[in-house]
Image 1 (spheres, protein in one colour):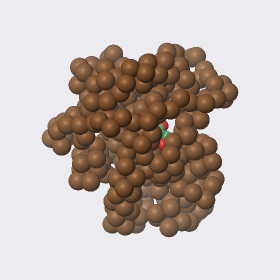
Image 2 (cartoon, helix red, strand yellow):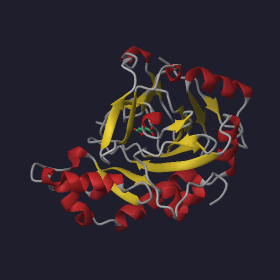
Image 3 (cartoon, protein in one colour):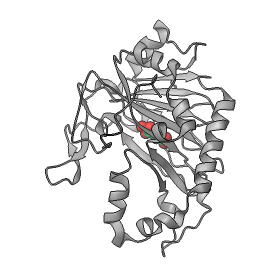
Image 4 (tube, protein in one colour):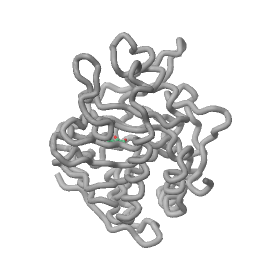
Length: 294
Ligand SMILES: O=C(O)CCC(=O)C(=O)O
């Protein structure tokens, strides 16, 4: 199944045709939204951050299953930090890294957009504000950022999900802004989405329960659409893919020799009510910012 695609406008604004496609499909592919030089600058910045990161500093967290509590905490407390997460296939049976750290990471999250000057400058962008408002988000707020590596050979699959499962508001408002920093296609673990799937129900919510444990609560038993309803969202470098929070999407494992770096921002509407039991927590000194205020 083929996905519709558009060329980004110069000022980032959305045409009536783009808005109609988004409303119908639940996603929107805008080719050429990010200049290739900017993609390279973000990749270089991440290379420098990974260079400064010492895997030994988290080796106890990732090395043994006995440390699963520490691993959970490392994730739970990452909402307002820059933390590094490895691919599961990056370790051998003894818990030792089998790859160079640059080729072993799954992602970095979840507050690059606040804490790193280069990612902050990229994320706080008038053009993105315009896009969000054109989509009807009254008060766009940046909830989280992720740099996703999908490294060669061991890049893990991302199972089919809806982003409002993880970042929930009432009414639902989560919207993903996913930037291809390299070509992403069906050979190196590109995205797939279900056209029109955002019109279906939200299947689950990932949130804290009354014991402060993270749980995946089923809201609706409707299964996700079968394989043949998933369109490949092939994205040349520089493409912005906007994902409605209810659209089922996934990405394949990367068994190819090419990496598939991407940067994703997830936005919620400040006019909606943030669910206080969401997994993502930020300190009182770090309120969410909009696209325009760095
Ligand atoms: O980059 C990927 O492989 C998955 C990204 C994704 O699912 C998301 O940003 O919501």
